[in-house]
Length: 376
Image 1 (cartoon, rainbow, N blue to C red):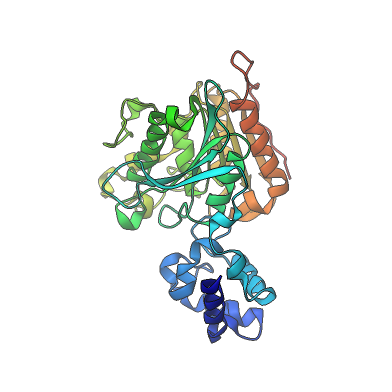
Image 2 (image 1 turned 60 degrees about the horizontal axis):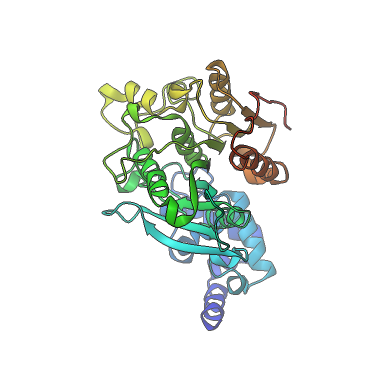
């Protein structure tokens, strides 16, 4: 309590953060926007803004938008002792959930860690279904520590799922493709290897991700061992495939990104000679197949970060391949943060999706094949 009060005093003594009006405050924060793209990444922040970046990144996409900065300004204006009530993401955890922080799924890198969220009650015979949560952030930012990626798995653990929230290597610390795919696949293999101790049914695992995380969970659903993307990590005797995927604002086709090849930088940085082949290998659409698991895709038509066509082409490619149970939730607005912007619809849809696919009794007929558009 005393530390929180000190934190509040420090905040109140910082003139740039607490100018007289909201517009001045947000404008002051955006002065560190080096590339003038209207958002702040963690590399463009410092001090308290950097320290509490993940807390204020409400959708966990590795960026602070003007909307998120405005909400931060409003929270601080309404309650200058806000830090006392929201010290850590754990404060949002629901009763009846046990959290195991920073479990190492592979040794040798600080990003090879995950958090486990467990229902406190004893697991039923055969184990519980599991969920893997993968943060976004353009493959260069983001963390399992952000409020969204801590509260969501806690929420599902309270509903009877065994959950993990995963960190992976980012482009600035040895990540990019294929390292990011290697890492999340390793995390799923770790999950399965520890299924008995965690009370997990290894045959019933789903995954959710947003933006870059949506790309990665799509790869978890589609990329088989023969594709050569398992990496050199641990538990290679285990499968890294998941049985259900929910993905929002999904990058799915790097070969046709805004009608051209995705640039040879960022997640796809590498030698120019193999750039086209690398883009194809990194694209979820490359692996669309009849035996693909059920997919729930969420995308907004006005997404300026990941074009709507990226979600649409994945849904269409899966359907054309004969995949069962493909649903596209299409919104006119909501932008890149559509999953939270339309949470009254998306949260319920994801909850129902995972319940139908992962909680059904053995022998139950799986959901029928469908692609649904027009969800406004």
